[in-house]
Amino acid sequence: MTAKLATAFAALALMAAPHAAFAQAKDDTPPTAFGENKEAAAEDTAPKAPRQYAMIDYDVASDPDNIWVLDLSNGQRVKARLQADWAPAHVARIKELTRAGFYDGVVFHRVIDGFMAQGGDPTGTGQGGSELPDLKAEFNPMPHVRGTLSMARAASDDSANSQFFIVFYPRFSLDKKYTNFGRVIENMEAVDAITRGEPPATPTYIVQASIASDNKAPPPPPAPATAEPISADMLSAPLPTK
Image (cartoon, rainbow, N blue to C red; front, side):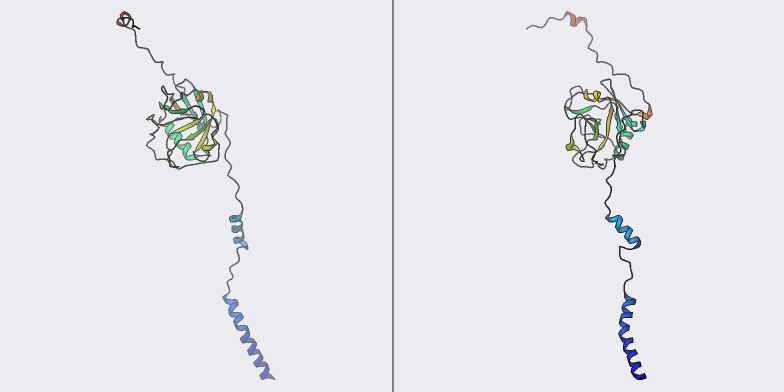
């Protein structure tokens, strides 16, 4: 009897051994649905909330460090809100060039009726820019509507530098293709009065660009063009014949 019990216990031990070995070798790493892994998985799969873009503040007395002031050769002063939340690098570039006096005296070289007025090229040809490196695109979903400030560029998305344009009427086809960085908030009528042409015969130009927080006074209006003085010889010249 004792011998039979011993044999039975030995057999049970042999049968249990593989299971014990398996138990020691099994992977005890918790599945991804447990503990910290569960939280990480939830973060990866949870839908992300759409980005919220800052609204335009039309109060010209608010946040003057983000108001671009353009004194134009037509005698008008325009104020535009720079939206750093939409395009931080582009707004920083506009501020840097403005405070360096880069835009002073620069013409609007391409002005298309019903579309936009483009400027920011010191050569006045549409081919120039600043010596600073080109900017990476900061395309955003903000629409190109009346008064929009947007950055001009070449064929490459990442080729904006100093040139910009102001939209006369909505052009939604430009959305997410050009970097929208602000909006005119005062005196859009002065933008409407910019001389048309590609290029204009007598272009409107920026007399002075500034940031509102720098408190620059409007410059004196440009002197009117003076006619050639009339000489005695001109008075005594014969009348033209038909």
